[in-house]
Image (cartoon, rainbow, N blue to C red):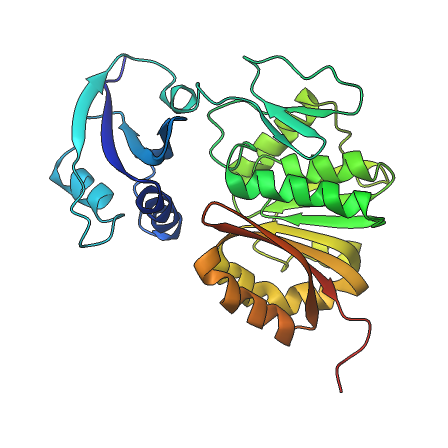
Length: 306
């Protein structure tokens, strides 16, 4: 059995969240190092812990790579320990409590579903590092989708770009059961995870109305995504940089008046993302913030300005 080692870094919440974003942007990251972050206690919401798991004793390069995720002036304190041989990715999220976002209730298999008649339950196993619904950006998108439905939005054709676990695509289909839904991600593993979660949540897979079709694609550049457009709803819970780059493509792929739901951006990055979307022909319909994260609902203008 392989040795399992853990590197823990206690730090303020903002520092851990920034480190998680830096990890996502690190193109040369060693895939043998799995990263997760969470609060230490509900009573101390600003005290967080970044944890890294390895199947080897971390060497100086490993430690330096983890330390570089933090700002140079942060000088993180790394605690290294060997842990028992367990499913260490799942273990990192084992304590996740269910979350409610609008009518949605997202829980792991270890927790019971909410039996209330109006509740839409999704079970997403822990250990899936693509957005289990517990991160503020995913929960915020779920709540905003619920708000869109309550305020009368009609969706017939939806694309979830960067679908992760598939939960946002599933939520869109739950709200608009006759919609065509396309779920894509740049990571092939995410596509496999989405298919597994669809089976777990009895979501129909396929290309017809009331079904989710899953594909591997970088952004909007894929024949299937192009062929299934135009859309009246595009979801993208990714990162600020790609959101800025993709804003024109989102505009091209949406019908006039169509909705664009964005997250994955820090509140400090919101102005840049909104400028890019304004240039692409969008106006802000609603926004909310959860912690340091922004959730934006934008609408494509029905005609050009001027």
